[in-house]
Length: 366
Image 1 (tube, rainbow, N blue to C red):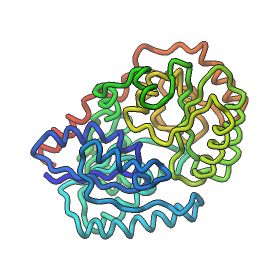
Image 2 (image 1 turned 90 degrees about the vertical axis):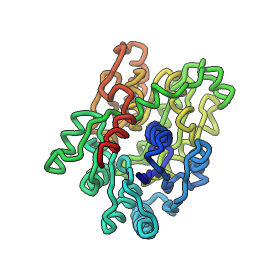
Image 3 (image 1 turned 180 degrees about the horizontal axis):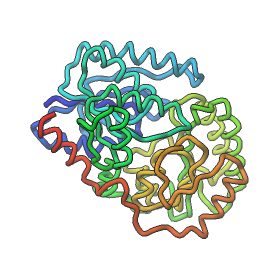
Image 4 (image 1 turned 45 degrees about the vertical axis):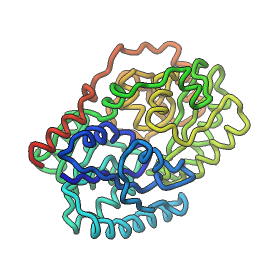
């Protein structure tokens, strides 16, 4: 069975990793990675190298990066991706192609496949992020896909409602939990040796992406966040960079300017899966608006300050505190951490055997 894996960023590749490993060790499958988006961007860490170093074949590489971060640039990049992927689907044939999530470039790759009747399997469908244009792309991909692997029953039921029937829809749990159970996460000393960052110092892991629905407010939001970070005391600030979204470059510049003048702040373009999850394990808590603050953070669990509206609609587990993007609100939420009582476990996203379930379903007759 020939499988294609569409991956456009460090984030979705990290989620795919347990599935890629499971497919690779089974001779029933021939698996090829189709890399595009920020994987091919030097400014975003050229994470294609990580895929190759992990031992996976990447015969198809597609340049879909936007020329900038304005709405016009993003729209033009979508058109560029559709055009580029029309050639991919003409030249390459797969029994099944996996797509994941809700990015605009993922939507474009899938949209280009429709005239070719490509058999798509969608991971992470049925979720909601009302503060991002990703919401429309995710549900559109659901309608384009033939098979659906969701992370909770709530999300499975939403996919069934969107499709009008439950055929080909499975709740398998989150692949990210597989990662967390299988990966030998780095110790504090190992992490320091690799990244020169000492996580024995109380640290906040920070990732802040643009709100692409209210993109005109992002400059104000970035200023409020930076002002809050300037007034934060007693923590090392480990900051990973935003996605290639509308106004993402603007946020990146403001964050880098802040980092350059604040020695307690450290900027990292891409930790890779092992580095990021290890940092999450050892950090005091998380701050930002990344989806990893929902699925992966629930595993430990970690206290998460979820900023703004980007992730509105996701399941709010007991470790998450929603917070408006205002300086005083952020500082109050940081202060709240000292009194935070976390549950011992949060298990809404499965038991860490999602990849095996997906493979078994594939072998039973997709």
